[in-house]
Length: 133
Image (cartoon, rainbow, N blue to C red; front, side, top):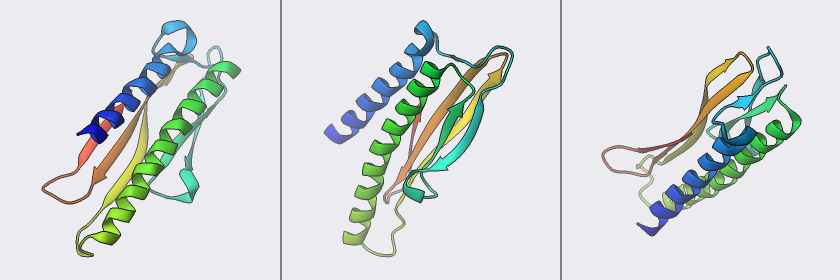
C-alpha cells in the first residue's frame, strides 16, 4: 500500500509540474502558429518504455517538459526493474509486464497537450493503468 501511495504521489507531483509550465496553464506553447515537433525515444533502448521528446517550443518550456518526462521515465525504469526481478523469483509461466507510453492529445495553434500512460501487470486478473496528465 505504501508503494502504491508513493507511486501515486510521484505521479501527482510530476503532473503538477507539467501543469505549471508556461505560467500556470496546462498547455505548453509551441512556437507561434506552429506545431511542436515530437519524436519517440526508448528509455535505455527498452521498447516497452517509450517517451516523447519535444522541440520547436520555447527553450524553457521544451527543457522543463523534457526533463519532467525523463524524470518520470527514470522512475518507470525502477518499477520495470522490480517487475523483472519479481518475475525471476516467481513462476516462469506467469506473464509480467511494465509499459510506459504516451499520447499527444492536442498539438495545434501553438498549444501542446499530452498524456503519459504506465501499465503494470504482475499476475492476477488484470493489470493496472496509471495515467499522468
